Length: 314
Image 1: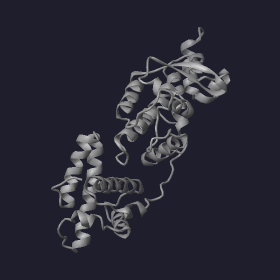
Image 2: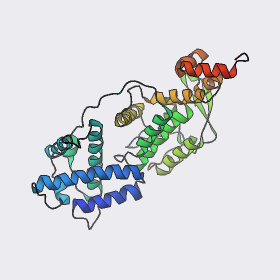
Image 3: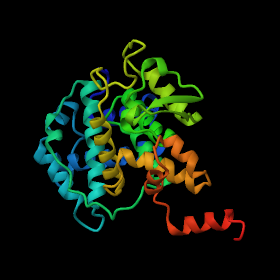
Image 4: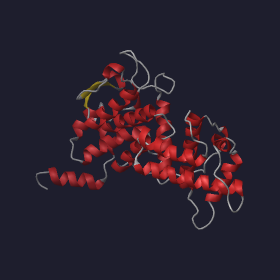
């Protein structure tokens, strides 16, 4: 519990330092979260002090903010010329929850009411395959999730990076054990049907797993699963599925963006960069080439370009 902080404004300033120095959040994230919470505090001053406003709420008052108060703020942000879109409302609510979580953890000011408020129902965009930029954005969003402890965000970033960087299935990523860390230049993976394959490990994948291992608060035996849940048990596939569902909602991506879409992206990006289809088949562990061809879903223009580049009569 932090001393010498008596008002919500003082706690807000300390929170921004916490995000920057302890959570190592990106400047973009600190700015976005900070702007959202500052607008929230401005509203509470007017809400509790009348039209002309009042003093900034005390820490104790922040613990008394009701679900109705928070819903009133979100309704206020939907009005007027500068009304926020539903997705921005959802992001504002996420920022407010992160601030209240900080008040609880660092200042002993709990407020369960904020968890009762649900954000707007977001419309799902048109289905589209995950692109390289979208994969990067999803991983960056996982790393910047301020509602999780640092070791959890490091874990989520490491898992998603493994799925994309090595083309792993969820079950394959979660089958890694403590003895696999730190990762070497390649991984031996046992996939469907007991089929074993070797997949190279990129530096970015190795570094992401290293960060997670260094942050992990649990002591593990050599044969125990490497990725752990919040209370220390093995991480479940359902967690990874729920994580991607949350991230794609924040970024406005299609419901076709699933954990398996990272594996799909691994194949399509390699193929688009000129990798041999047979090599991709081996990296994915597919039994037949026809499976790889269906999985990559190469567009006609890409196939034509590859044909023209490779065929001797082209």
